Image 1 (cartoon, rainbow, N blue to C red):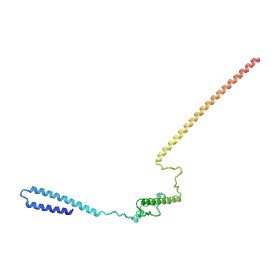
Image 2: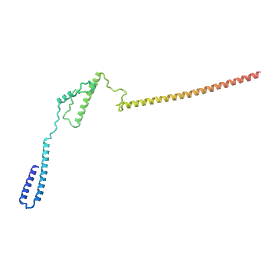
Image 3: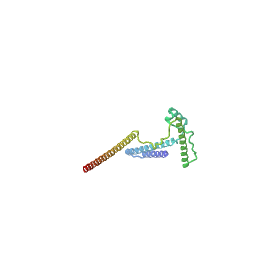
Image 4: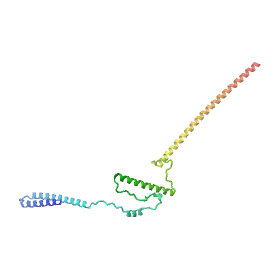
Length: 220
């Protein structure tokens, strides 16, 4: 690209020199127009050279990223930011050995090996955590009546509990009122039966008295 640009410059310079030698008198305006066009061409060529040089430098500066496992540096940072807290406050578990996966495996075999390594690491961490909980005498199993995580807030659940209590109290009051009504009805029924029984006894007594009077009248 640079060689082509230089060749164009040389041609323009030769053409301008030839035009100066052959130009007639009174052609100053045409000469100015030609000069302006040449300056524009040179500006475009210069911009193109800058872009080409910038692209070349960028290609030379781009280098592939090389990851580095700076274990010592990470340990130093860990010592700087870690806090001396009881284990129950962090509940962190470190596996006994790092994950090692066969580098020769590819595709699905690599995925299966990776998942198996993660599973084994998580299983070991769960066992270590269980032993720590037992040693600290901290319960870690869910209660028998625990079925799922709560997604409602305590305030919302308190309102739900109060509503259930209100409904239960209302139901009990309704049952008590119904029982009182039944007792009242039963009491009225008993009272009516007693009144009927008394009326019956009174009628029988009057009938006996009438019979006695009649018998006395016959005797006399």
